[in-house]
Image (cartoon, rainbow over all chains, first blue to last red; front, side, top):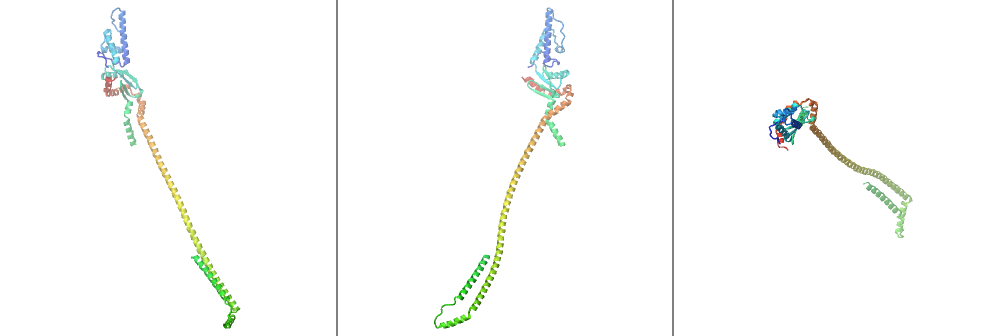
Length: 167
Length: 207
């Protein structure tokens, strides 16, 4: 289930499968670019990387990788493919689109408390009001305000009955 | 009693008539064939004396007296008969009146009894009808009451079932847009922390 222990980690900015695939495509693109430069320079190893995106830059800095090295390139790709294929995935729905800061904090919590490579898919359910709805492979956790109201229905009925008696 | 008086009066008149006729026959039938014996002279003398005494004038006088006496008796008996007839008629009227009154009373009693029976029958029928109507009304009232209670219970249950949704919808419509996700972060993290073990369990052991 869990990716193999390669010593690498996902940055917080990589939240879900979309970010992971984008990161993987970019690394492969960098790898292809470096390979092309190597072929064009007739055996001279390239000395500079192309401009990297923020996600890839954070990934490289977090894992202290040198993408000019073919071994690090392969290691990173293998890690990301392994995460893509085997990392646990979770779906979280909110009533509105979350901000990047909010998702960073939430991803940090999931990576520290649930699984270090967990991938989060964000959904939108305006009807839940507040809170969130978490859906794993087999379970459904309704942590919304709507569910809280439904769970407190008996309390509401009791309060209404008390108010009727007082009236 | 009146009939016996009438019979007695008629019998008395008949007896008086018979006695008068018998006396008339005795008086007229006294002359017979004379014996031509020695006594005939005596007898002839007696007869002459008798003829002398009971001459036609005397006999006429007796007849007149008898006639008068008979007329008197007839008159008296007629008066008695008239009185008896009046008495009998009066008693007969009273008897007829009593009989008719008694028969009328009996008939009226029977008629009243019939009316009372019919009245009682009608009252029983009306009471049965009233009882049936009351029972039917009571059943109908119970059914209506039960149906009202059922509908009321259904309304209350429906209201209670949908109350959370109604309040949720109201709260969301009222303040849903005002709640920022960043403000909810602590609340969400607290809920996630409460369900952390279940999430880990599903991730580690799920399919």
